[in-house]
Image: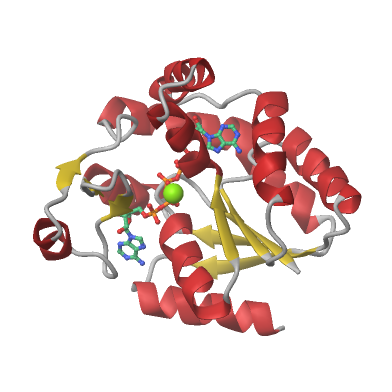
Length: 211
Ligand code: AP5
Ligand code: MG
């Protein structure tokens, strides 16, 4: 069964999806990471995507779904979708894609976090680019010391400036919050409190997945 992990920018989707991947063997698909990898490849598509992400806006639904389809069809594992769907149209397209691929969505879980706390977390978030090109986020499972020890380079995401963070929240309220109502109406929706330490949020997610 696949899972959708929802939440505002900075709610902890990426952090928790990585933990679930390690613990339960899911395939973690972060659409933000997929898009940033396309940008890093230097392709023409990547250049178009960079302009949109740098504004804090959303990639078009059609482009997002066509990029995602290749990633989804390449795995037999259960998937955690992180940052997708972000519009009701994407949620409908996801349903169709899963039916076509013979997959099933089991839960759509929102990590709920007050905006103030999310802004605080995003304002201090750091990434580490390893010599291999792999990007790791600094957090409990990969610390600043790990980054230094592996001769990584610290950087900040281009959309983590105060101005971009504000814009991402306005996009979230307008375009992504309706997805929560969409999943409430399907009975797949569950919420966990993101305003707790990483382990507590993780335990709560595991409890929801066992229901
Ligand atoms: P994306 O990369 O998905 O960004 P986002 O949704 O804004 O979410 P973030 O990745 O910023 O936050 P997160 O919830 O993963 O939190 P994290 O775990 O990092 O998307 C970026 C852009 O790509 C979009 O703006 C859009 O342009 C485009 N895009 C992506 N998907 C798209 C789609 N489907 N359609 C169209 N366009 C799309 O945690 C944040 C920080 O908090 C970290 O520093 C972490 O260490 C820390 N932290 C986490 N948990 C805790 C905790 N419990 N306590 C304390 N600190 C914590
Ligand atoms: Mg993320």
